[in-house]
Image 1 (cartoon, helix red, strand yellow):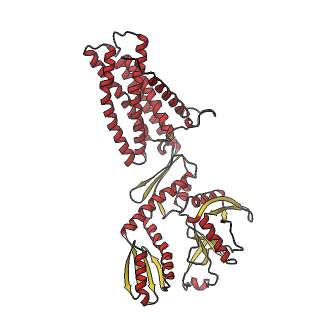
Image 2 (cartoon, helix red, strand yellow; image 1 turned 180 degrees about the vertical axis):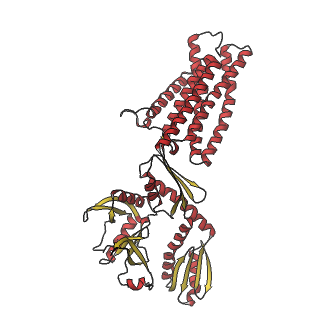
Image 3 (spheres, rainbow, N blue to C red; image 1 turned 135 degrees about the horizontal axis):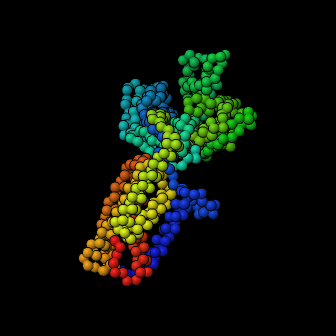
Length: 526
């Protein structure tokens, strides 16, 4: 057996030092001078820490309808540019309806619509009446994008709560699993996640007759919307507003939203900051409509309808409404994160208390400790001195797993703890292969040093093959699994890599150092 390379000894020492430094935050509070990169403890999952679990259903058909509604303005602009007047232009479900005033313009309108809307099926109903129905392929793409966008919006909102390692994954075609470890306020989580946060600015129709509109005579291009419910003469009342249907500004033009204090009424408010495009449009809107009212509409309800006193060129606005500090904070979060592309509905909710999570941690730790002790005893009894070396490698392996998962920010779940228990058995499996090979070499009459060299060399390919195939399975689980399955896959992958390192390098280094001090060896305790 040749002298063990010193660089490998230094590598093992460095890995051991880093592992201990990264693992310590999990069992003690580290001092202020502790390196920042090694001061993050292991994150615990929902089943170990307690928290909120929700399954959301995204109304993807509504997303398609909204996309169709947004194209109404595009059709209007195209027809106006071509000086083609229309009698009717609206969206119903996934279809746009257009009725041209003059039938002689129908052919021109047909060509324009067909050219500018390739993602729609154009149907000529005759007499200047056209229908544009969105194609199935494009509707499917909008549905998929709606779920993906909803995941990102929800993730941004939850991150603003200050929670760590939330699980937000897609389930099926239109459902989202949301798990927030360590968070217990289910009602607030549902409210924050489920708010569509659709923000719109529309002009109030000052010339229209509200009373006639309420009786059904709504002027063309107008809609009726209502304010929040109040009490009038002892009866519930919602203030009606006659508004222009056209949306002048929307939440997509907001760059920031912060909680502020309205000095006039000394109450909490939300101050909005528009992006460059929104600031220009808001400046133009307030300049052209000084003395008129514009409505701030939040989630389909008129929040307020202030009078534009003067041109506002600063690119900011304020939403008031008697908010509590928590309400103002949550509203700022959802507006800053952006609106959901479609409404979401909670179809399943679970709340796991921290006491139940603590029980899971205790039981999981007991299984790891008991399993580890049994393996340690078996290796020491069956392989004697070499078994004790394997036990040292197993302890190093556990420290390495905890350190690696802490450093990469992985979340430990109950299946992940099961993965650690499995890893304990796998960690000594490589040592068993090596030690049995060494025994075979001794039985063949080789010297102890030659037997050790032969044992490690001949077992290496088998160890690598076995661990690589298991690692491939773990990668597949991580790629196609979700939630706890991914947690198991991460723990298993880290455990496999750690066990290969400790079995192949660490145990051989310990044996090499021992033999160097002993000098000539006549027999092995194996």
